[in-house]
Length: 293
Image (tube, rainbow, N blue to C red; front, side, top):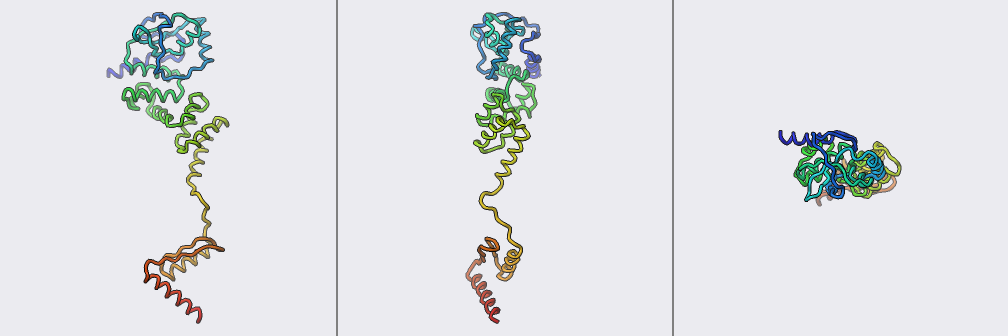
């Protein structure tokens, strides 16, 4: 029960969807600190920040200031950002000397969880960065997919499907990170076992603006073609040849095979020992004798 209460408190910190709107954080007062004493979190899940969006926020901060404090933890006389790196970057661009922060004492696991929760709930995180953040939580703290889902307030299938994206080649995950390929498009490609073709199809999806449904159809076509045996296809035997082979099987009482068509080919008559061969020879001799009569 204590763990569940802690999880809910962490999630409650970030129920607002606007990154620079003043919110109440449990009655804790913010303090202004020198911006040069604040460090970015190297384990921040989000690695890509849109420059145009940062400039827009920077203009807003230059006019109104930072309305929502950064969440930080003390680290050897300095402050490590737990949540609010985008606000920090925008404030730095705006030339602010001091920014409001709220200081919390948190474990490394809680720091990772909060950083992931903040980005996921604000939909600022692309699917690959989200997957990498989830994987780090699992590897660093021994969490299961179910536990990660509970921590970040997402469903287990969401976590599973997001983590599956990490199976894709880097060329494809980079397209997702850059926003050129949607997570839905990327998931449609996961089952392809030919890396070169997978990357080629991903590039085609981007260049041709394929819908997810269109891409799924191409993936199905790939597996359909793959299931077709290579080499020349066998033509069906004419009914007359089939009947002849059946007659030969009955006459020689052994296995008879034919390779070819009605104009050219070979007939194979099996024998399994010398007695078998002698028996077939006797049948041929009898047929020759009957023909003379």
